[in-house]
Length: 184
Image 1 (cartoon, rainbow, N blue to C red):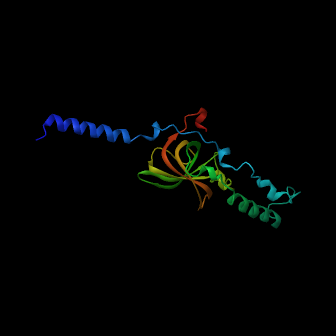
Image 2 (image 1 turned 90 degrees about the vertical axis):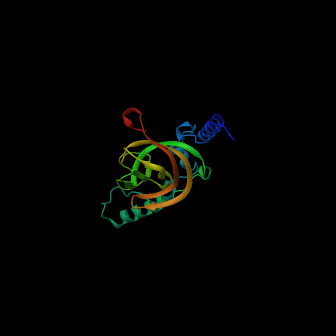
Image 3 (image 1 turned 30 degrees about the vertical axis):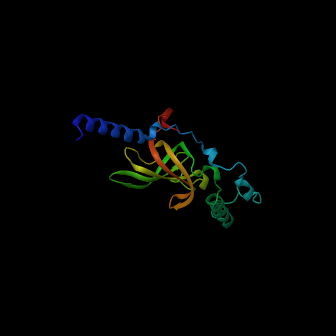
């Protein structure tokens, strides 16, 4: 028969071993990712608009202006991503735009590089929008709060009413940005 002391020692060792496996997200040393890291070095969206000149004098109601907006939206929504970001773990600062929010908190949101993106039109290019899924609902944050998101990036386009994202991220942690003025 196993004695109480032996059982307690085994239980203690088992708990210690399980605790060692459960490394919290904040203990992982995530490499900081900048928004520039998400744009291919050779991508120049302005190449698509070199044939357009002297449109600044036209009124917004001119059909050529609407064609320009449509063309810009097409270029932005199909903006290329950086293949090396697939599966990369990192931490990036940006602004939170909720997609799915409930009593438990925010489970899905868009992360964008500047204040007002995706709320005001037009949204940024797809390679400047990250569709984030939090592993646990995020509480205490609201739309356009500056945040740090740490987790694993993926390459998958996602279309929402607020914009097209070129990246996904499974967030291990989402924390309020504590920089000067709360800005990333």
